[in-house]
Amino acid sequence: MRGLKSYRLKTVVMLMVRKDPDRLWRLDYTTFLEVLEALRCHLNCGTIPSYFDASHNLIHGMDTWRKIDIAGFINNAVEDLRASVGTRLCYDTWTKYFEKERSTRITMPSEDVLYERRVATRPATDDCMCATCFIIVTLLFFVIVLLGAFGSKWIKIR
Image (tube, rainbow, N blue to C red; front, side, top):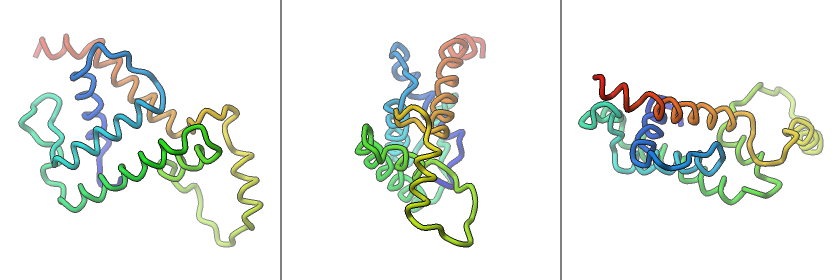
């Protein structure tokens, strides 16, 4: 999703909260997938309205093919992530899409060694929430909480 600023994703989250303020927003993978689907929808429509000025499109200057490319990536990711929930491939699927490569290897170890390393570095709980995804979802949760607590007061003041 290179070329897509985090501000745009945060705006999509804030727009979702504004649309459904009474919803019980949970800190789980389903909320994260809903945010990705909403982002894909905005990209397909070609617009992410600014939270503070709906007439301002945050992706106005983005190339159309770039929008299509990112929307396609999100579509594939959401399909794979939903299909992997509750399976042994769940962790690997999440990290495939959302974990940065930690190092470049010059020599490739055998598949058995790679599998052992992946198994050894998995989180203690097998609930399909890798550290990267947990951090992303946590940040989204705090944006939602802050918007709920201060958003309406701040908007009324301005």
